[in-house]
Image (tube, rainbow, N blue to C red; front, side, top):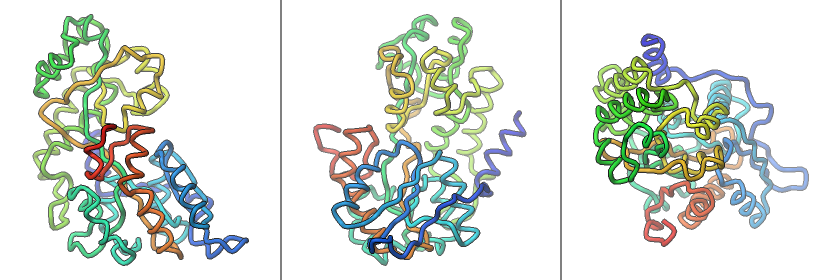
Amino acid sequence: MRKVWRKWIFGSVILASAAALSACGGGEEKADDGQVELTIWLWNNMGIEGLINQYAEEHDLKVNIQTADFNDVHNNLTTALAAGSGAPDISAIEVKGIDKMKANPDHFHNLLDYGGADVEGDYLDWKWKQALSIDEQYLLGLPTDIGPQALAYRLDLFEEAGLPTDRDEVAELLKTWDEFISAGELVKEKTGKAFLPNPGNMYAVIEGQGDAKYFDAEGNIIVEDNPAIHRAYDYAMEVIEKGLTTNMEDGSTEWSAGLLNGDFATVVAPAWRMTQIQESAPDAAGLWDITQIPEGSGNMGGSFLTVPKESKHPQEAYDLIEWVLAPEQQLTVFRELGNFPSTPSVYGSEEL
């Protein structure tokens, strides 16, 4: 198990997955009625489809929004870019994906050429830089949301294990990851239930608490020598070896059932996962609460909208992206889905 997990962690950083091409790609010149048509790849429940359609209607565009599973979007895009055909006009890419794409920025239109520099001040500086090339001359995408994290915990399992259930008391109990694992051992002993749905849930948050991940500032791969990555790996292996985790993949049918049935006691919950939890297990309302994650803050996830080089309408694609991801629209998505904006100008709003 240890060798398999190590291979997954290190190998996934370097190797892009291969998958079948989507049947429909981008690059259409004009729709039959003379309108510019943009093909857009999103994964399910991103929450921006309505805004895209609104912009298209107001700007005489035709949009072909194609949604798929998160992994399928990334795999299909990687394959299309390598083949040089089949890519859409606009594609969503998650933060780890955008990091890999920096190795070949010429697969995308440089958004600095279409107005990107004018909106840099709208976004968090660190988030903006995630899509910027090492020499800062190439911008691959504009940021959607970010993923500030909390820890969701199951009230009845904590109570059954003799642990506190008050948010502040739970935060005090779980100040460190060692204390987190100790609490997990107690839950397992007293209830027979797991503490986490899967080891990757824990790995991702500890990974995100480090100063660097897989690449240094010059773009060199540092995963083998980065102590923060090894620390995340070691803690993830510890929960596996102590039997504190199930093998339910986040967002899967089994995971949703586990939320409802109490098959695990905690879930690392970035802002976007709060809605996912509520929608996946509505009948579990009142059984879960949230508190701080161990050892401070962190960010998990957060995405970008990009314009692959194959698009023949890069300016129209960029203009759509700029409007959909502007502060006002990001606040709208937050109101509806809880996706946390990457645009600090709205952080003073009453909703946030």
